[in-house]
Length: 243
Ligand SMILES: [Zn+2]
Image 1: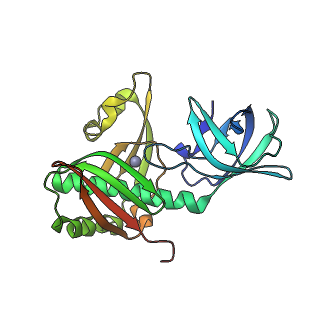
Image 2: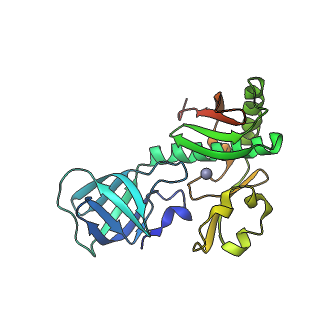
Image 3: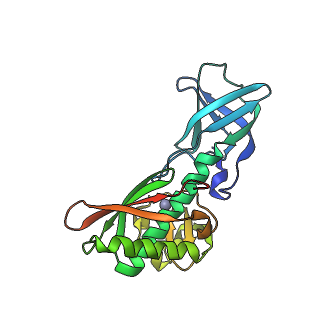
């Protein structure tokens, strides 16, 4: 079982871990703990490296299989032994852009629900760009600018972003969570990780986020598309660092 370090500390860039197993067929290293985000919830997986003495294993991506995180190794260098201790390091530029983008999408969710009552049905992201699907029959062109102003106001409001891991029963008591897909959580899941943009949005979510909406930076609402009478897809884009 891999302890998921990113769940409680999104800002952890490097860590020490013990090799728990090697998946020879997939050339993957399984660790007892990891800061690598293994993908999911629309957020792509992390890349980075694992260092063992003089050897550097380039990790092209991570993936969660059951309770384990697999770190896929680039190239064909000999794999480490079970029990060896490695130093892990994630590609922070890539990850931090995804943290800003993921939080931006939650701001969008919160604003669209608050101002128009529209529910989210899905979403996806790449570094500095993303899209969300809403049940949003009244969406039209003139709203693009309004929504853009409202989301940037929430960036300016510098709202704290809080992550909590709650017992399932407690999470089910939160009215805001019920409007998201919490009811779809499998029976066996005893704890629910909750991401709250204080005063704006609350979701069951496994992703990594910045700690304050001010870190997101300017959000551009670039476009929207009708995916039918009710379903609308809204696209956002973020500024590159220093841009
Ligand atoms: Zn999310």
